[in-house]
Image (cartoon, rainbow, N blue to C red; front, top):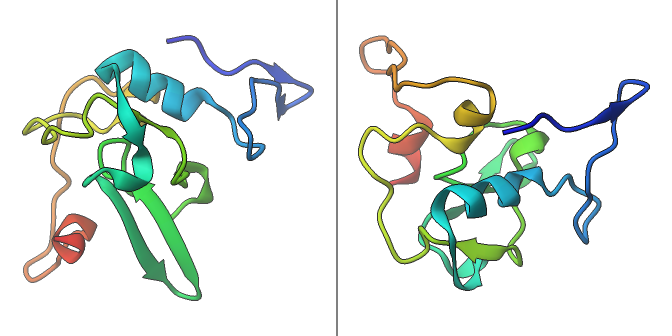
Length: 119
């Protein structure tokens, strides 16, 4: 997948209705196809509080605390809307960064991941 074009260090890619780079949802549609409905109706769409903010994320795209991975309720749903995320599937954000295989992050004893928190 091609990188987002930049002009003078700023992103010059296609923007969605909210002023966000449309690359995120385009990548999901290219990988998984499309489904009827919106992301807000998908079981992979999550909403959680982090400090003083409410974060909206897509589990299939990747869960981070960064605003760069914020998701929109009204995005057109991808093909995973009525399916489960395949085991050992690489989150889309890692695919876009060039990561090609699933390597679980090491955890300390008693540490929970964001996935444990959301389930």
